[in-house]
Length: 200
Image (cartoon, rainbow, N blue to C red):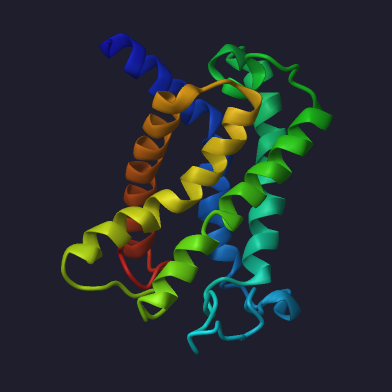
């Protein structure tokens, strides 16, 4: 059992290396004074029926575009690295599909969309609780939202993986837990590098 868990965690990290790199780079990208025309909220500043914003100012078209572009670039590059290092057998995407540029382009776009779009339901829910963008809430719900903040995007990218490799529900949930823990550690690192306003 322990060997099974360790092996699959290794597969997860190998498979999602492009996603991790894209996530880090996108944090820098959204702060750069470029492509300002796309730095607009996904909800166009509109309110929901309860009078609160749909998603808030932090979810922008520039962020989504960045996720898609960087995931696509890193996935294609990672395909070359996996081939050169002979580690394709450790990547879920290549366990049942050929490692080609065309395939990696498709995977990269889907990972970028899966990552960014899976964050939107969390933002929508936080606006319903009147939690300001980038802020947390007190009490028990704080723990819930801290976990959800780390796991939301992982739900999306893990679904993309599951579409191409039959993870099953247990591996999918393991993906989410490991991904959330990794996301938390990266956010802490980005916070200390002053690339994030809040640690959680």
